[in-house]
Image (cartoon, rainbow, N blue to C red; front, top):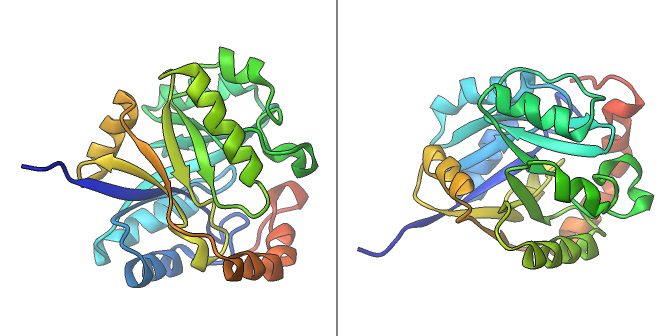
Length: 237
C-alpha cells in the first residue's frame, strides 16, 4: 500500500496576538479554502488563541496543535504541543528547555531573517545559536513577503548540517488568504503522525503558492499587523 503524505501548516497567528482573524475565522477559512487537516496556532507569547481554536476544532475536520511563538533574547522560537504559556525574554536554550519540560517540540522560526526584520530572526543567522541549541526542527519555508532569501539560506544550512533537525514549513499567516502557503509534509494523517515525523526527522517542507496578489494583500494589511505586534503594545481582539 502506498504511503499517505499529508500537509500541515504549523505557524499561524490569530487576533490573540498580531493576526487579523479570530481563531474561529481561521478554522472556517482553513476548512473552506484549503486541504489542511492539521494546523498549529502559534500566537506571540500566548496560548489563549490556540486553546480557543482547539476547543472549537470539534466542529471542523481539523486538528489543532496548541502552540506559541516565544520571544527570546535571540529571536523567536516556536513551541508546538506546548499548552502552558512560556514567559518571553529568556535565552533560546532556556526557552527550548521550557518547551521540552511540558512535552513540546521546539522549532526555529524563520531562521536567517535579515537584520532589517529587527527582533524576528533568531540572531539573524548567527549559526552559533543554531549549532548549539537542541531545537527539534528548523523552519526552511516561511511565506512572509521578502524573506525568500532567508528561506534559501535556511535550506542551505540544513543541507550542510545533515539531519540534526527535522525540516518544517509554516505560512506565518497573519491574514487568512496566506494560510497553507507554506506547509510541513509528513507521512500519515493525524497530528500524532506529524509529531512522530518531526521526532524521526522525516518531514518535508513545501511551498504551495505565494502569488503577487497575496504579497499585495499582506502589504495592505501590514499597518494593522504592526499595530497588533505585542512588542509595540498589547493586542486587542
